[in-house]
Length: 196
Image 1: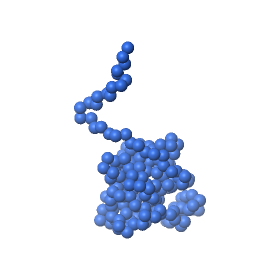
Image 2: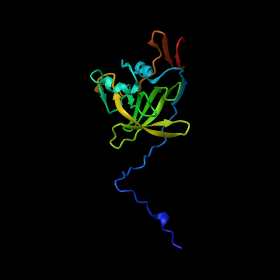
Image 3: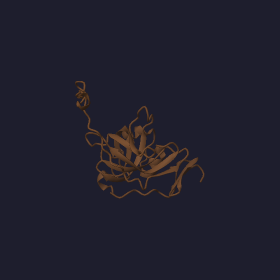
């Protein structure tokens, strides 16, 4: 008996896009950290970490930055990564680039990706066909894999793009307020919102 069905490739319907599988090696997660941060969202966290004085929903930062801050498709330490508004991310999302590992991998710090937590040194990979950081996958620690693909607008830079340093951005050890009633304290011991 000759079995040929198993060895044959299934034909794709005409006009179907053929995408190459995404190979993502295991990242170094030795410095990955999750800290409790009740009530802290990504917007005030990104504003404090980057010094970019924008407000509003995360996805709106891309348009709000036009004419005020440089924007681009190249990650740099201290830049804010702006994720688009989607069904999963109704307000979009912001993350601060901490380190550029290579042209397709970065480490980010962000708040509320995991509800009520600040995650630092989270690996993110660019899976866009054009290597333009428009399609991203974030490290999922419980499954030890990169998760779903998220669309991104790009990066907002706090200073002119050509003056950014390639060094990691350290977490501030200061108290900065998002509103007069609710200080945000970010330190090496975690994040708190409200009275310390």
